[in-house]
Length: 392
Image (tube, rainbow, N blue to C red; front, side, top):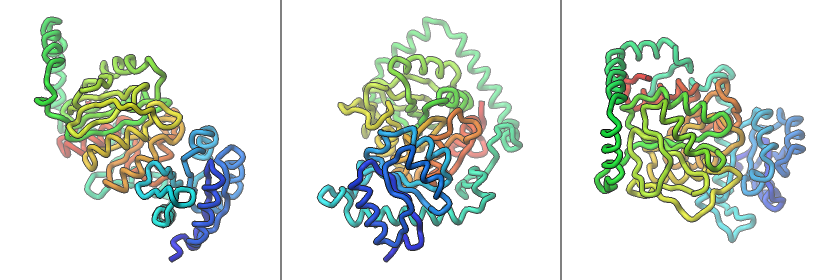
């Protein structure tokens, strides 16, 4: 069966052997190959010329992803075609004994994904494409990105009394004596993880350039009662994690802290992934550092954080991709969507400093909701708290 009959395909890979392997395999499935080569600036220039004759792009991420980030960024910015990112490390049916590491089932699975991506893209009307907010699940209400929209105002008015009560509670907490705070911190530091109620719902926040400000705006509007723990994977230089934690903790009703080994994730907190250590979460919800380096160009790797955390929490996890450059987070988001049909949201381009990273998950047809940081905060509040939702 020719799954790609009539589909014009573009293939990018850092390996000539893989290029030839994929071209031959997909031609067998009926695809027309419009362009096949190394992902570099010259490749993107050629693609700009023939993009109107192509339907979908397949990018093999083994080598090309790390070798030319500038080319990938330009592709994401200039080319308006759906993109499927593939990496053998995220392929459960990878067969190293086959040519190029692709088994026949793996090729068939890739062909099905490409065909589905093209079909989804063609079925979306121009007016639908212009507003990602319309692509929401039937079970959740649709509303504009603007946090000052009518529905937001209605939610705020319905919860005015609650907001006032929370503000009073915060004022009382701020008046605590230093001695009481020290006692509370002392008791907390000696809690045994066996008696801590670990988080049921965990969302990964992925961010890069422009991310700190976007995440700050998002967390500033998150209600304290939201039954979620956040794991923040922010591309940073070493030594800046502590500063970021301090800044975010000042503005959020959630407790923001650096990840430390042995800590159990709990609702009402944000744990920032370290730059130097790869972090995962074990079956009890406890943070563990493992003796492996982050994969890829970025530290921490958003892809690896999504892969590790969603493997633990599965359908109780979620992903939000904020402002940033590149495509970190796409590969693991694809696997998350396929295995668990998980929620994947993204910051809208208008509010990003650089929109390449959220755009990449949108181009892969993975995002069910796009919005400003404030709108994303309201969306997650409504997701868990329904009509009683509010934003601070």
